[in-house]
Length: 230
Ligand code: SF4
Image 1: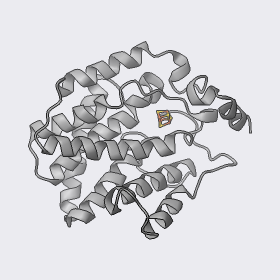
Image 2 (image 1 turned 90 degrees about the horizontal axis):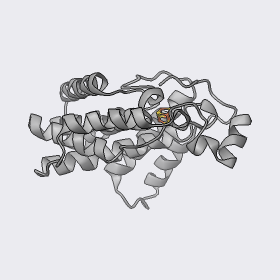
Image 3 (image 1 turned 30 degrees about the vertical axis):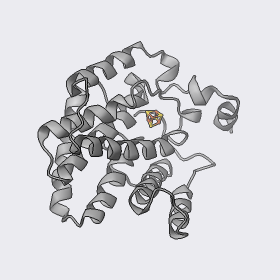
Image 4 (image 1 turned 90 degrees about the vertical axis):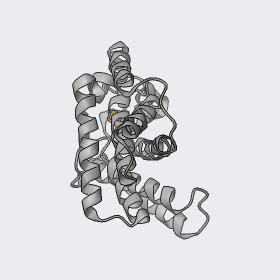
């Protein structure tokens, strides 16, 4: 993640708080766990955009996925911090494999390599929270990454705000659904190693306009260009 991270005039703080207010109203459709994941992912993405302290795991743009998964899930399941630390090690292991076999850089392989990798790491971590097997972790990572293959990197104005902040939400929720499938015994038809390799190959085929240059995708829309100029 190399796009500029300086806050724009429209530093988009407040969406996480809005989500929390909505949850507190009792009108949420998805329920407390998913609702809290959405709020946490937004808040972390906002913290990054507003130059607050974050942990770039695997990147700054995708920093909201792991905390949005681990903290609400750990609390819901009543798990001790030690278990969450173990899950972070699991996530780090999967991240290391993805970085080695493909990429975790939006500039190199698009957002599939940032939000997609974060989602795969988080999916494996959730499986660990439920004492799943290594095979289930690999399947969870594969299922998560598969669902985000081809996702382009198109930050409006070159700033890690739009669409980055809200993409952390799909990364987190996608990780949860992938982990649930893996824990249920559902397997990815394509093994994790091959999914990761495919992600790298898709990244190599992506035009430069869709790899963090802010020249294509949402950054090139009429509104995206206007915001970029502002
Ligand atoms: S759109 Fe690009 S800069 Fe934003 S999170 Fe995705 S990879 Fe990172």
